[in-house]
Length: 405
Ligand SMILES: [Zn+2]
Image 1 (cartoon, rainbow, N blue to C red):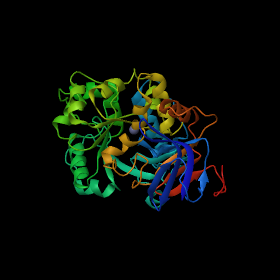
Image 2: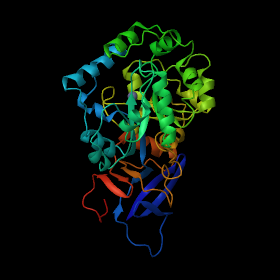
Image 3: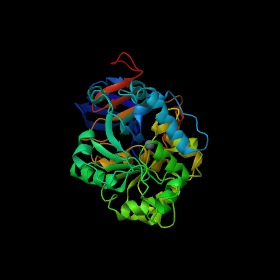
Image 4: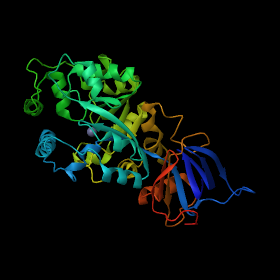
């Protein structure tokens, strides 16, 4: 299959013009620019359009599609978590097993890989054919469970392991998750340093809101009196950051945390719209980038976001942190989110030999060949005309093929 377009952002900061991308099966076999004498006609010619590597959403909860939109937030995070638990209970403690609408939305946004937390079991048969590279991480809670059964935990995880957070999963659960993840050669994923109460609770054992939540979940541990450490320091000291890790949110930094992150290099997953929804103070993103801490972007769930689109998240970062270069921003929604999975040599760029994951965005006008102008034009639109995952077209607004569009 051959695709033509006027532009391609082949990697962060790199633009090619008059591109011709050819696939064989699920691989990119050639990538040329300009006119190639004797080459066969393109199957798809998108004209004034931009081809990007497939976008990566580094944090989501697809099972929360049942919430049916954002769950109102009254300023108390524990109330919000409880509201989701209550919604789930009203459904007989089930969540969305096959999030059809979310998958469609992700593909339409040019997303090809989604890193997804699930507390319940999804419809794995349907998910395996959903079209996305869906990377599931089973979430574990049980703050009062100090003797977890590793075999039982392992039997619940289709792929990866995610202690929910330091204040909801016991240290023993988190350590077991790390060991199981390492055994399966998977990264770990965990919500970390998300709220100020979490830091306080892990340090001193004192947070009325967290204690209330744990009691309601029957997971309260009366023997917990704090560790004297921040959640980040604690996880580092306990070996839980030893190995590829998605450290989700990391909205708050206490003294010494930045150095720990720079030393252990988990991938911080910043979820800009969810962060804004919960009215957190500005995210320490510039500090992370400055310190060399890896960062990727995620959407979080539809319970705290109105859509699932890495580009939509990048557009908010562009407005909030205009000092961050467009090339860096592209990295945060392509290769950065795939690195903890060890996929950096397989996708995240457009070049021969790599997996055929890409998205094509049509342009209204022609912004010129500058990387920043083209990236900004894609951010403004945000809807893919075609999304290819593993060599298969999973979304297109173009019909029928074999014609210029
Ligand atoms: Zn989350």
